[in-house]
Each structure stands twice: as C-alpha cells, then as structure tokens.
Image 1 (cartoon, rainbow, N blue to C red):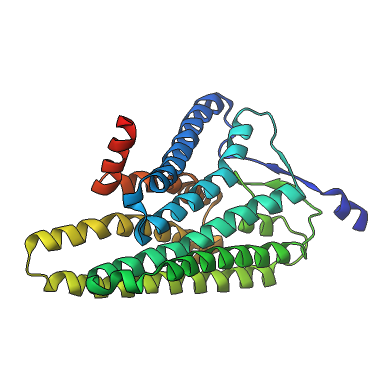
Image 2 (cartoon, helix red, strand yellow; image 1 turned 90 degrees about the vertical axis):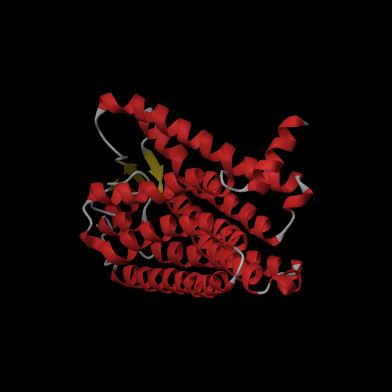
Length: 306
C-alpha cells in the first residue's frame, strides 16, 4: 500500500466534457474568452496607470481587482485550453497544488478588495468633504497589502493541509482544474479535517467580507436617499451599480458552491458553478466597471486619439 501511494504523483484532469466533437469548438470559445479577459483586465490596468485623472483610490482598487481577475483566469484557463487540444491532460502533484494556490490566493484577495471598494464608496458618498483625508494613500496601500497578504496566507493554509493527504486509489480528478473539493474525493486519507478547515475559513471570509460590503452600502443607501438633488442621486447610484453587480456575481457563485451546496452538488453542476467564477466573472468585470464609467471611457478616448 505504501508503495502504491508513492506512485500517484500525477493526476488526470477530466475537463469540462469528454465529447470529441466539442473539443475544437470549445477551444475556440475559451481561447477567445481568455484573450478578451486578459486584454480587458490588463488594458484597464494600463489605462488607470496612464491617465492621471484615474489616479484616485477608487481606480487604484479597481486596477488591483483587474490584476486579481487576470491571475484567477490565468491560473485555470490555460490548462483548460491544453485539455481541449488533447495535448496534455496530466498534471503533476506540484503543478496541481500550485494551480490551486494561485487560484485561491487571487480569489481570496478579490474578496477583500471588494470590501475596500465598498468602503471607498461609503467614504465618497457619506463623507465627501473628508474623502481625500479618510482615503489617504497610506490607507489605500494598507487595504491592498492586507488583501493580498490574507489571500496568500489563506491559500498557504489550504495547500499546506493538502500535503497531509495521500492519493493511492485513483488519480482522476473529475474537474477542469485542481479544485480542492475534487481532490478530497480521491484522497485515501480521511479529508475531514481539511474539509472542516476549508469550510470554516470559507464561511468566515465570505460572510465577513460580504456583511462588511452590505453594511457599507446600507449607509450609502441612506446617504443617497437624503440627497435632495435628483442628479446627485443618479450620479451616486451610477458609481455604485457596477460594484454591486460585480459583488452579486462573485459572492453569489461562491456561496452556492462552497457554502450552500457542498457535497450535494453533482459533478456537472459543480463544474458549471466553478466555470462561472473562474472564467466568466474575470471576463465580465472589466466591462462591468468600464462601459458605464464616464471617466474610464473618456480616458480610453484620449488614449485612442494619441
């Protein structure tokens, strides 16, 4: 048994589908999605860096959110593309754990960056006269640093616990990336401790950050309703709508797959949920924040004219 355990140092990713007639069409679709995701997110980062008018706390957080989205997509999508081409459906133990580490760290950092963005909107709408004092450069850097630090530590905890598991009966991961719950199902070691820790931290991080965002927007809502100017209300709502849309998409899928569904979700449904927050949300976010944002569109027009 010990000899068999040491042999399983590689896994097979089953991917999204095994149907051969869909491999090339899906490759083209996901390749287009990945290129669009990277152009959208990296382009938004470049635009924020290039235009001095976008050197504000809100766009600083938005640039880091775009970076986290690019990292999330890049940790998962290239392996999906390789699987569609049937070039390589194998992944080593180290690559598998590394893939989950980068995904988990960027996704966790995104949770806290969304909190920072919600607090920024609270400061801008509820305390407009003190906004530049409250949202100082130092505070913004602290928000961003803490977001990435928590993301790295949370991923390190989960990956560290993965090393206590042994894989001796099956090396087939019924997923398109090294998703942690899928790894638990093929482990020969009892993963109860891992699952408990992952669940507790998922609850704590997702619920605490989500409630912080909700608390910020409750204050924002009351502040908006107190505004006498219809134009002021409309402007305040427009600055918050993109962030609320992004929060709803991100937390909705995370809550469903990691908190509500758990082990009751069938494999195909679980893949679809995972596909949404690993591939689709990073694709949508730069467009959600840009298409209705006058300052970003103006900066884009200036850049294209140059």
